[in-house]
Length: 484
Image 1 (tube, rainbow, N blue to C red):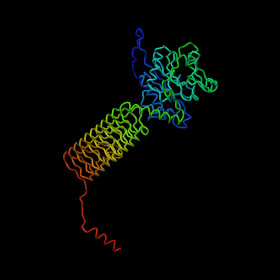
Image 2: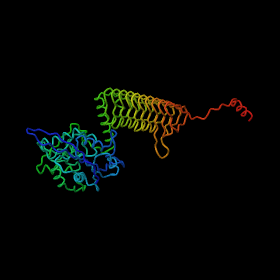
Image 3: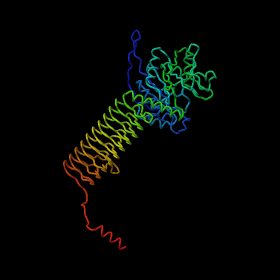
Image 4: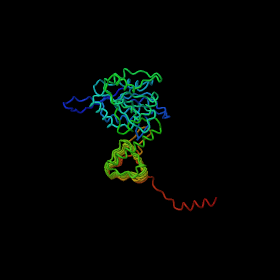
């Protein structure tokens, strides 16, 4: 078992007649140990992606939206890969080995819970369309009605192999029945279990303690907790999701593709609701964490992923991919560009065919043109690198001009080194700056130079061999050829 820091959060005080003590923050257990054999993949199911993030990341993002005090992920199949994918998150990892069903996974996850009176949410790691808003409603309903368990149900177009929710004549939940054990009548029930549970701590402990192995599969089913609690008089409610898609667990490649389309449409709608113009929604891909400001314009065949921010009045032209970037107000990017981990300042212009790698910062009014690549480069206001240039581990002063074919030679085979180019400097075409090196303010580099030493402010540096002209050489050459 591996631990991590516990996040702190607070709950708001609720008033129902007389003031009540605030409920402790929720804790979350995410079941992510499934093999996912129907995916036909060596990759664990929860690491398949929609909207640029894994299924597991999508569930964890939804969980983070309710400010839990603790998040536990129960992993099993391919756990090394899953643990690696979770390395940047504040998540406690518990290993289920051997796999003995969802009930066993929940029991293992519960061993990592901290003592507290707040609710415990148990979530499936393969339900990427679940939202924080729905989880909050589930928590609120359990608290307001003092339920021992509130769980999410949904009515998909085809319930298929999903567990069915069985209610009595008055509509009260009695149990969840797995399809393999259901009668013909029960299989016709339209309401399915979403695998999203909100337990009181006592109810979870009671239910897990009474789970028994299924006689056929030899596994423990968490769905049995519903009947365990209802049969002992505990208060249990199944709460139907407003959008059935939130309860949908992904089990096949076809379902993965369908979920991708749903997530894509959600993101497009969020962008347009924020005031962005999406020229061709059918060919545009926007990640779920991308944020837009009004009057941003996105052209066809653009992909924007990660935590990118597209600010007011900026424009992204066709066939461009943007990952974890900030595109400043009035900036224009593309076409045919790739940007990752970069900041593009106000009114700057990038492309076409430019690549900005992580650590690139363009201040306002910067021009980075065609076939220019940058990495850990800062270009200050008004600097220009119009074409055919590599700028790595470099700082370019305001108003500096970088000619065509310029290279900052930042790697000596062992270490990376820094290049500094001063304000207003002019770097002639086809020059190489061998780092570490500094070119001073208003300095000039002659075209075709290889610079290995610092250049003072205002100086001209040239490192070409002297030109030599040979009069009559062409005629002599022709004569030699004729003599042969």
